[in-house]
Length: 299
View 1 (cartoon, rainbow, N blue to C red):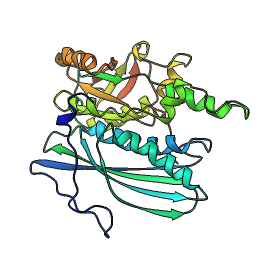
View 2: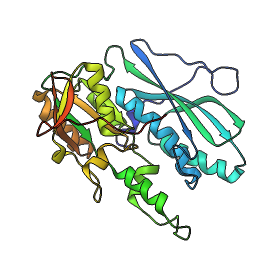
View 3: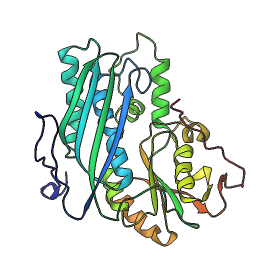
View 4: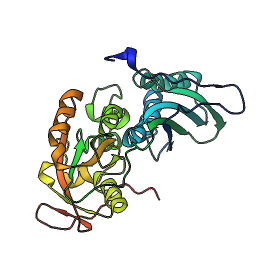
C-alpha cells in the first residue's frame, strides 16, 4: 500500500479471550457501527468457495464503513457451521485475512455455533465528529455520481446459476470476481467526507439505494440512463436494479466536479456523473419518464 507507514492500525484495550472486548475511541472521533449476515443459498450459492465467503463477508461490511467515510478499526465474527472441514475453515479465514492486509482492521471477538451455514460480521470504524457521510443531505442541483461499473456482479451470479456441473470452477471469470470479491471503496469514502453531501453503497441495486438517499434527503433525481456505466453484455435496466455491486453512489455540489475528477485520477477509479438531484420528489430518466426504484428485496 502506498504510504503504508501512515496507515491507521487499530489496537484493542482487551481483545479476544474475555467475555467482552474493550476498545477506546480517540477524542474527537465517533464510532461507526454496522453489521451484515450472509446466509448460504440466500446471499451466496452453495458452490461458493470458502475463501470467497470469508472475503465477501468482511468486504460487504467494509463497504458500509466506506459509505459513511469511516476508517476501519475493529470487527467481530459469528459463524454458524454445519459440517465444514478444518481445511474449509482455514480457507475461509484466508479469504478474510486477505482483506485485513489491505484494510487494517482488528478482529476482537465473536462466536461459533452449529447449524446451517451463515456468517455474521459486525464492523466498527472511526470518523471525526461531524464529518460522517449519511444518506441525508443531498441538495437540489447536486450532481449524482457512481463509482466503478454497475451490473457485473449480477452477470457473475447469472453465470454461476446457469453453470453446468462439469464446468470448471477454477476457470477465471472477472464477473465472478466482482460477485465474490467486491472491492470496498474505503479510500473513496474517506476522500468524499469533504466533498459529498450524501452517500450510500450500492448493495441492493443502484435505483433502490439511490432512492434511500432521496427519501432521507426529501429530494428527487433525474438520471441519464445512457451515462450509467454498466457491464458489457447486460442491459441498463438489468444492471441498475441488480445488487451486489458495492460501489458508492453519492451526491456532490456541481462546483466540486473538478475535485471529483481529481479523485478518480488519484484513485485510478472510474467515477461517473449520472444525474442530478431535484427538488421535485421522485425519480425520472433524462426524458422525464418515471423510474421505479426496484432492487433486491430481503423479504
